[in-house]
Amino acid sequence: MHTTSSVASSTHQAVGDKGRPWRAVAVLATLLAAEAAMVAWFFGGWLLALEGKRWAAFAALLIFGGLRSHIEQHREEYRDASVSWPLILGQTISFAGVFATLTWLAAGATPTMFGDIGSLPAAAVPAVGWLVFSLALIAPRLGLVIQLLSTAALFAAFALTAWNIGDLTKNFWNLSSGTTMRLVELLLGPFADGPVVRPDQFVIGTDTFQVSISAACSGFHGIGLITALLAGYLWWFRRILRFPQALLLLPLGVVLMWLANVLRITALILVGIWMSPDIAVDGFHSVAGWIAFLSVGLGLIWGASQMPFFTQPDGLSPPTEGATRSLATSAPPAIPVDGCGPLPTHLSSTTCLLPFLTLTAVTMLAQAFTSGFDILYPVRVIATAAMLWSRRHDLPWRTCRISPVAVAVGVVAFALWMLLAPAAAASSAAATVRQDPLQLSQPWQIIWLLFRLVGSTVTVPIAEELFFRGFVTRRCISADADSVPLGAFSWFSFLVSSVAFGVLHGDAWVAGVVVGMLFAMALYRRRCIFDAVVAHATTNALLSGYVIATGSWSQWG
Image 1 (cartoon, rainbow, N blue to C red):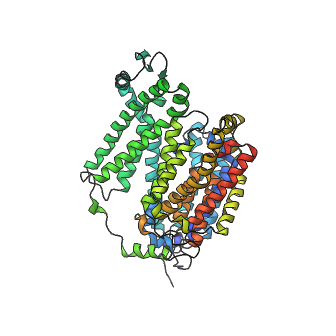
Image 2 (cartoon, one colour):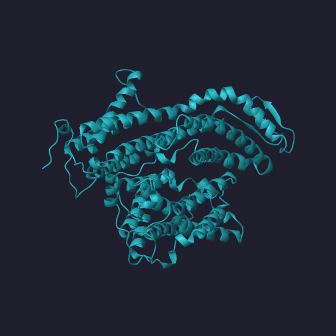
Image 3 (cartoon, one colour):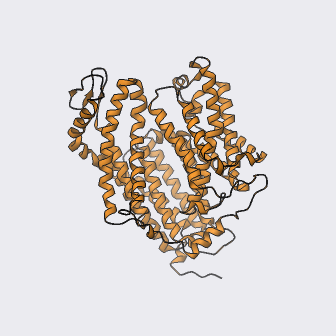
């Protein structure tokens, strides 16, 4: 028999039910999934129309990461927490209040009896109640509920700062705009096809192509993002960083991001001059900012990790005995699986990451230099295939055997995708025409379609499954992903990898989450990542057949 204190009894007893670990977390995850589906169904169009969607997603991931860090510190207690039905009822009732609030806001948010000032607090009350009940549902004692709420409040405050940091950095633009324009003019001089002109304070280019630089495209959003990214890096990796010198990464990131913005504006004008104004405006302009952010952010983090001035590798302490035991119980034994051949139960993080990073990088670069039809799609197929070929010794796919169950999972995933993908996925007639490969002449039309089919059914499924099911699932179980066998299960890794996979699919994120869960289940059944690849490839093959048969080219994305 297990006794608890009077404080603990105010939430629910931490009964050690070893037979059903993470039961409370699983119940909460189910509730949240159902509630998210309801919100997406009734308010999806309204929420997608709101400004700041990317900032909101970033804030949610930041808060979620902070909560996960707290739960990991008290892993055994959360693992064995029991389920409290009164808390489930409270969470459900408070969600009803949140749902009613969203209905009120979507209808125009008429002022409350307290006036305009009272509208926001009135809308926040059910949301706060929903948050408290949700956290209390998984916390085994009151003290941890308070810690969870404190952690959520701390990271919410940081996320709110990150949300508004763009406005804060507008002042930086006001101070640096003159210098920015002078540097762009200096860099353009040797490469422009004519004299550089500045007909207005924030208009620059040549006689053939000019750009107007407003505050919105001045780079302050990138400065805000890089500040938030580096601040999160300083917090989560504080054990291996040297302070106070590690704090120098923040001003260094701001300066590098500002210089990257100067290069971005210069490159934008050169693309408009040398290639096409349409490519500069429709392609390069929308992607170059993200390329600059990822290059500066990841480059700084990698550079800092290689420099003893910023990092102290000895700060990484070995895992405790309890953590080691927990990992051992959550991971299945590393044994060969019949039908899956000698595919290793351990794949290196490098093998899992490089194909997806190659696919992502080439996709962004291709989008930067195209406008309208994705004529450069074959380039990403070739680049990803080349990377997979370079790692072929770690991926002995020829010895694997296709499982009928994995194919069936892919068929079900296709059916659910067609059912759950929003109507917006079909896009407008204009978008369908813009992505129609039939506009190409022969034989390029056939060649492009063949590359598109190979990409959809081969390179993309392999690269994405290696990343989401091969790396993300294991990284969520342990910081040392290489030590975790393929197919090791935990609710946290299952949900995070599935949600991340859904977010990758934009407006069709609900369908993406669901099919991501199915691909993960294909992996867990035999602990064979090839099954997840087969399921993914089957879904994409069926979708490709539907697209070609119906001419719904925008469904290919």
